[in-house]
Image (spheres, rainbow, N blue to C red):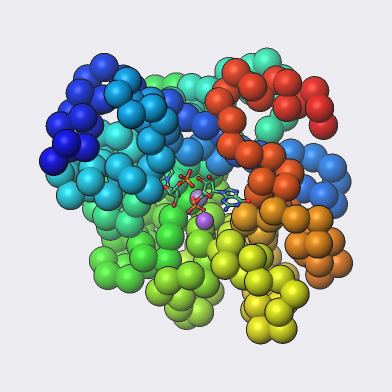
Length: 252
Ligand code: G
Ligand code: G
Ligand code: MN
Ligand code: NA
């Protein structure tokens, strides 16, 4: 309840901000994208992570508000970088399953692009496997239309929840993000087998693979040796506020 009251105020007083985590492509030494991650700068409690407040926001019906804000903010910021000549690949925005299962999801994204003027090719939407169960027809319709607009679709946390290989190959997915669990367990036969299997599927179906949560040199070396070149994780860079991105770009 305290968080819920706090959230109402946070929306009014715009206490949210976005951090951006780089996604780096070791095959060409180029930036592949920035994932936008929301943070709540609470005056009383400091920086609060989305894992702690998004579930509350969802239960109290505030999530659509927050997600609209995230989308607009990320598109505006990405357009700024684009106009400054920063080649960042794409900006990736997380969306929750519920929104995607609603008619009108496509229109919300299209509106944000129109309003900000961001080219659709610079936007990626990160969905989770949860979105692919239930209201499947609506989800596929939303995704197909986004894809024809030029927006890229990433399947986040792959392998962690309700994995359906059928839906993986049926849905218009451009990018798969291998869940951190498997990267954490690099060095163990079973996890390495899953990673190899996903790379094989992605290779045949022309999906890009991103490894999430890469924290060590050993993990990175294994991934590169396996042909997985696009990585995201603390080893390369932590999520950072937009004003630190220029310094990060200079360090590349
Ligand atoms: O950044 P952090 O590791 O604390 O994120 C925790 C979780 O919150 C992750 O699963 C991430 O996908 C999710 N998340 C972060 N930002 C957003 C957002 O803007 N919208 C949604 N729906 N989820 C987000
Ligand atoms: O669910 P999703 O993949 O969107 O969650 C992304 C979150 O994972 C980010 O909020 C970020 O804080 C966290 N994260 C990113 N890189 C790493 C990492 O290398 N290790 C760990 N433990 N968490 C990470
Ligand atoms: Mn994500
Ligand atoms: Na993830």
